[in-house]
Image 1 (cartoon, helix red, strand yellow):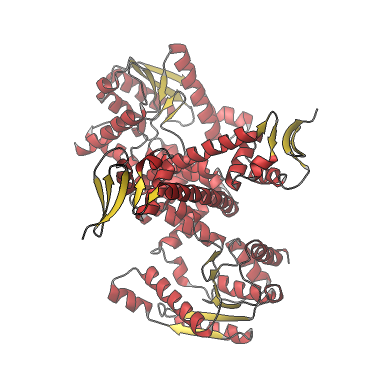
Image 2 (image 1 turned 45 degrees about the horizontal axis):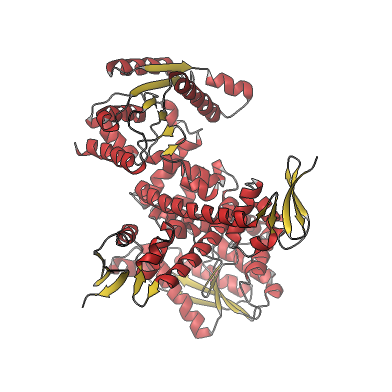
Amino acid sequence: MKEVSKLLRKVIRLQKEERLIPHQSSVLVAFSGGVDSVSLTDALLELKDFFGFKRLSLAHFNHKLRVEADREEEFCRGFAEERKLEIFVGSENVGEVARSSKRNLEEVARELRYRFLRSIKDREGFDLIATAHHLNDLVETALIWLSRGAGVEGLLGFEPKEGDIVRPMYKVKKEEILSYAKVRNLRWVEDTSNRDPRFFRNRIRMEVIPVLKSINPNLEETFLRTRNILKDEEELLKRLSRELLYRARNEDCLEVKVLTQAHVSLQRRAIREFTGIRNFSKVEQVRNLLSKGGEVSLGEGVKVVRKGAFLCLKKSL
Amino acid sequence: MKEVSKLLRKVIRLQKEERLIPHQSSVLVAFSGGVDSVSLTDALLELKDFFGFKRLSLAHFNHKLRVEADREEEFCRGFAEERKLEIFVGSENVGEVARSSKRNLEEVARELRYRFLRSIKDREGFDLIATAHHLNDLVETALIWLSRGAGVEGLLGFEPKEGDIVRPMYKVKKEEILSYAKVRNLRWVEDTSNRDPRFFRNRIRMEVIPVLKSINPNLEETFLRTRNILKDEEELLKRLSRELLYRARNEDCLEVKVLTQAHVSLQRRAIREFTGIRNFSKVEQVRNLLSKGGEVSLGEGVKVVRKGAFLCLKKSL
């Protein structure tokens, strides 16, 4: 029972800390039928008095990607019936859509899945969508984004609550989910594509994380702590750069003198916010305009021009 | 010739940006005989007029760890003779020392190697020790430290210059070193322990980095850019927390009101600097004293005590 209480305790603690799901909410659980979403649903049912749901339902999206897809849909319908939950099922041939639009399969799958979830939410009047994302997903996401060059923002990964998405298992480790599912005698479907090495995320999970865990068995908790410290510091830096922007701003221009007196990190952040550009070397090019004349094109007919004591945004017509 | 100029150009650029090695310096190269230190030495000789060395010599430490160790020492002596460089050789049975002191082999090897390098530097009056650390070493180090929980400071890895250590190849990728060595027709010894999976660093290099590079082939450059942005932000945060500490400080105490008005990130940093503690949950315990009475033991007979309007450091006698 220790393992059961561990997962539940973490879900309860997060709810208390972050007020993830307001009392009397209608919640739609994104339900794949895998161990994560089965455990999440089971835990939410266990804690239904604590959360005080107005309505709790499942939504399953059949990606039609694998031969097992239809059997998995059947499993999901069966699970819902057994637990006396309403289930909404949608389906689309994701592979077809990806091929014909020549887009990345994971991306298309994600986009269509969320479009389905939102359509059910809107049509049925749910308040929130709960997903089964957990701490290992967070670590994987952070590593992928950091590798791609998303900087600290990448390292922060996703949040426990973003708009209408809530992630009650944000602080729960995968191994805790597996123990929970075992002790609770749950059944689920194994998604074989989770082992497909063509997906980056699977290689991160199967090849990278085990090595990092050999360095530190508490990798996930360690990462979460680092992440939360960074998150607070990120918030401070954002606040400071917004203050700087406020002081430097003059309609569509920034006062050079105000920027020059600020720390280089705040200059960078203020320029990013002012111009909307993310590309680091572009930001540095704009920053160079602080010490000399000239202009930098931002693309799409927009440029930043040094005009005497000001940096100004200009649209070339 | 493009590959040769790439490595040399990066070494030159770093020297110009960071003034790594002042003109007329006496430099001791940490020389293992591997491709990195052979390439570094070759590059420094190519650029000897640019750097204007007063003296350039090699130091080789024989760890006596592998049967090849003595042959490698011979190789190093031969290389030095061929290049007309003075070489200092030291040796110690590192395995023996690690076993008898029951300490980690990598750690002991590192400690004894640096002790040897410093002893030669001091005895012979060298100004600086140059090591062959490169950009891939930096990425590996950062991943190891991040995994261990060293936070942003871990992610920053090492610096191009730290005390008497300089790293001229800081921005050079391993593949650039290998191309350089090939085009320059260099010979070197292969350290078989670099493939030993018992060492964390080797698993990071052989198992983790390749996966991350499949996500982003420019991983090293991307990492360096992220690192440098973080480095600047870290400097700003340090400055702000030092200012806070200065305003809050009152002999061995901190004024609670001044701390309370500051951002949580600066509170944490100021408390870390004030108490010297690194442990996050201890820092949070001390931070909790801002809103209530009590005391927190820091170990070794030192504690932080809330005394009215102040937090004070106390030594229990």
